[in-house]
Length: 99
Image 1: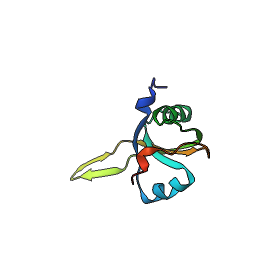
Image 2 (image 1 turned 180 degrees about the vertical axis):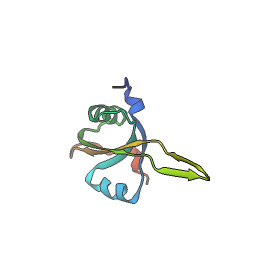
Image 3 (image 1 turned 60 degrees about the vertical axis):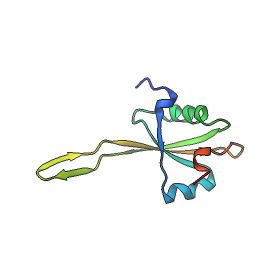
Image 4 (image 1 turned 135 degrees about the vertical axis):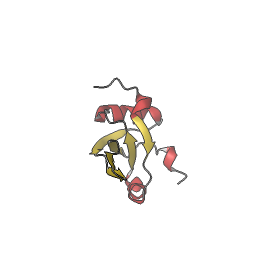
């Protein structure tokens, strides 16, 4: 297990039409470090965004895509996605408020 600090866990928010629609249910989607656990993701969200309380975390491991350029064949890097469900009395995450 990697020794990750809370600011290394969350890489960036994922902003798609599907993730924006789920924000009405207080579900937020983030791209996270591939070695991060659910407990580390929960701790990182609660520390980075003041007033938030995490109810649950769902994660997905995404394999790299096959890419080809001429005769050279390779793969893109693996990624991990996390969907964070906040509690009802939790504060909203401000990153997404202006979108």
